[in-house]
Amino acid sequence: MTARTRLLDPAVGRALSALSKVAKQGLGDPALAELVVIRASQVNHCAFCLDMHLAIAREYGVSEKQLDLLAAWEEAGDVFDERERAALALTEAVTVLTAGFVPDEVYEQAAKHFDEAELAHLIGLVVAINNWNRVMVSRRIPPGGYTP
Image 1 (tube, rainbow, N blue to C red):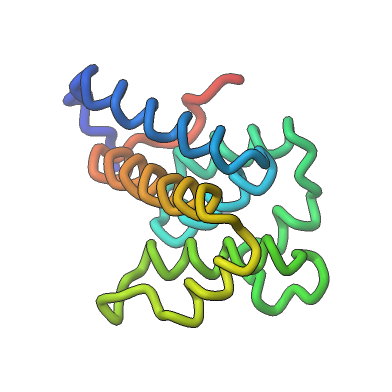
Image 2 (cartoon, helix red, strand yellow):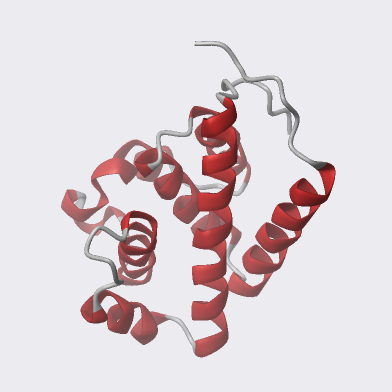
């Protein structure tokens, strides 16, 4: 598999970057933000984004145990707290949309742990990383290009 060399339009890249930045800032917890973007990137099979955000997560002090067990967060016991679990459940629901909607119980659980503004930013962050995943996967951008 080779990278598709057509470049992303700079204006689109700036818009996606701005959305990502605003959503992360509004969430207010950079470690949780990285868990969210890593989980979405796992679901979407985006190697570039995984490589990049795993490095960033380590910079923010996310534990290796959380990174190791993120793909199986539902079975990981107390490795993830209730707030993290609610964010990860919402991340998967927004990312996969197989039923056509985010289930009410998933949204309501997240709403217990995030105020209205945080919840809006969490959803914005999931939307942003899903956009990035789709851009990078469709262009077949390989991992390894990110430098902190």
